[in-house]
Each structure stands twice: as C-alpha cells, then as structure tokens.
Image 1 (spheres, one colour):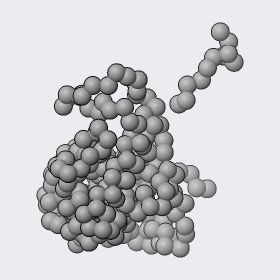
Image 2 (image 1 turned 120 degrees about the horizontal axis):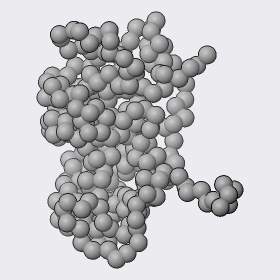
Image 3 (image 1 turned 180 degrees about the vertical axis):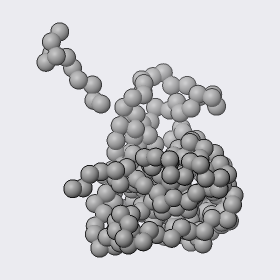
Image 4 (image 1 turned 45 degrees about the vertical axis):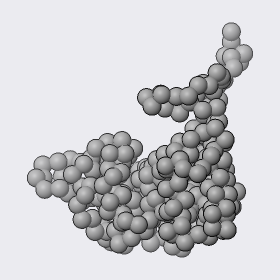
Length: 261
C-alpha cells in the first residue's frame, strides 16, 4: 500500500494542609519528586524577577496584554463558572498565593476536555462494561468530557435542590458541603457512575492545572511553581549543582525557551 493510500490515525482548612495532602500527586504530575523536601514547610511567595530580567519583562507585560489562552474551547459559560467555583474550593486562595481561579485552572480543564484526552481517543471504549476493581481505573462507558459535564450538571442541580441556588452562587461553606457529598457518594447519583469518580477527576485536574506548564492553560504566570519553589523547565543546573544549600531559582516555562527574535 502506498503512503497516499494509508489511512492516517488522528492523532476551609488552609492551603497549607491541601499542599501537604497533594504532595505525592504533584511529584508525579510536574515535579518528578523534586519538591519532596519542600512540602509542609512554610512557603512564602517568591518575589517576581526584577524588571531587567526576561521573566520580569514578561510578567510586567501580562497586565497590559490579553492572554488569548484564557478562553473556553469546550465549556459553555455556565459550565466554566461552576468549574471555576469548584476548583477554587479545592485549591483556594490564601496567604501562600493565588487560588485555582486566578491560576486559570478551569481553562486547563476545559482545554484537556476539548482534546484527545477528553474524548478518550487512545482508549478502548467498546463494551461490555463491568464494575471495575480498584486497581483497574476508569471503566465506565462515558467519555471523560461527557462524565465531567454530567458531573457539573448534577452538582448544579444538587445545589439548587438543597440551597435553591446554583453551585457558583453558593456561600463557600455550602459549596464545601456539596463537594463533600460528591466525595462521599451520599445523596448524589450520576446515572450509574459513582459520584466519587467525578470528584476524583475534578480534584486531580485541579492539581494538574495549578502545577502544569502554563502552555496548557493553567499555572498562570507560573505562580503555582513559585509557591512550591519549583524551578520549572530549566535547561541546565550547572550553575548551582555544587551548592550545598537549596537554591531558589526563577522558574522557566516552555515558552521561555522560544526564540522571539
């Protein structure tokens, strides 16, 4: 068969407690274990780079230019509001730094759901479907973007039933109660899928969005990395490799390695 004939495949307590609990997850997502000794310590915000540095210049421009990556590709406006409110309760703003909304976590989730991951493009999705064992991972018939939209819808309906308001309009303590109901599976039904499955997806995506490279829509201005003192995507550590003390570096993103000449 010639190349032209071949078919191409498509390709509250506080942030401190949350960071402690999410340390293992972060190590697997973006840090590869680098942050092991940092989690649990008192983490003051790092100062932004001086205006004369490349990073400082980029941050100074942020307030004066539009971030075109901060736009929904999958969610409608109501779904985006619910996602922003839910992720903010999982990763709230506090004295250590910005929360999920300011970091753009909802946009990270939106972009993931809009792509191949959200459509389970690389997963076998034909039946039969059986109840999965704990070691088997997700086994339901819904694609991830379908499950997530269903979860947001049920979350909003549950909020209206219990509090007569949509989730995004609830008080913080009420939002926490709704999220706890999804986490425990009590009084919540997701059309055959345990509500815990949706909650775990929401929580995992929230952590990813806070700490992934800004290329993917979250971790805006690398603020999530700065809270961890994580250096990001450095090209080399030769300048500090012989130092005995922990070195705090201004983080770099994949964008910083682009030739802007």
